[in-house]
Amino acid sequence: MTVTYFRRFCMRFDLREGLSEETALPKNYSLEPWSTKLVKEHAAAKFRSFRSEMDSNVFPCLGSEVGCLKLMKEISCRQGFLPSATWLIRYNNPITGVAESCGTIQGIQEQVDVGSIQNIGIVPSHRSLGLGSCLLTRSLAGFREVGIQFVTLEVTSHNTGAIRLYQRMGFCIVRTVYKSADLLYT
Image (cartoon, rainbow, N blue to C red; front, side):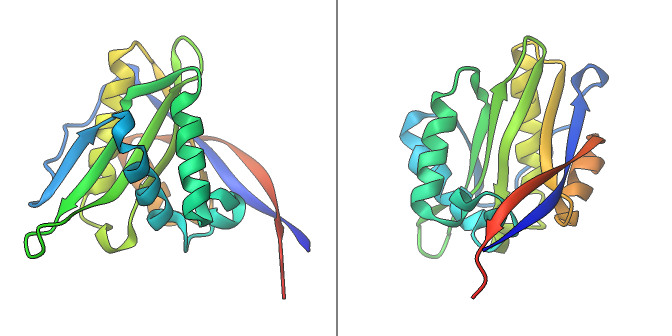
């Protein structure tokens, strides 16, 4: 076993400076507000979003369906969990008629005026459609509704696509941290 350190950026959004206009979702996609009935769908979207990403090395729970379900249950039971900042995106397949969860975001109120995004994930086959922007905008509005002024998140430095999205949305890097992870090499 080898210990590896992953560089992560702590980013912050100042809600006092306003929000971007919400962009419309593409056809056949829908935003679903938080409901305890959706915990398994959030977990499925989280797993399918992160299972092949570097973050599943940094946070092993993201690499398994069971781990994602446990994480989702823990997040939704945390003190400060914000249903208003927690959303799910579904894709309603027009050919099969089956709806699939393909995007998720969760929010926590950490302090009176500070919130944090726990995870934002878009399933790879649904990326580059503006779904991340939609989730972020809706989540930020949910934070604002409860009086949050600053929203933070962490992102692995190798996740350049996510970093570009966050910066385009108005997040700024405020510090760099290092997360250790035990990696098995065979």
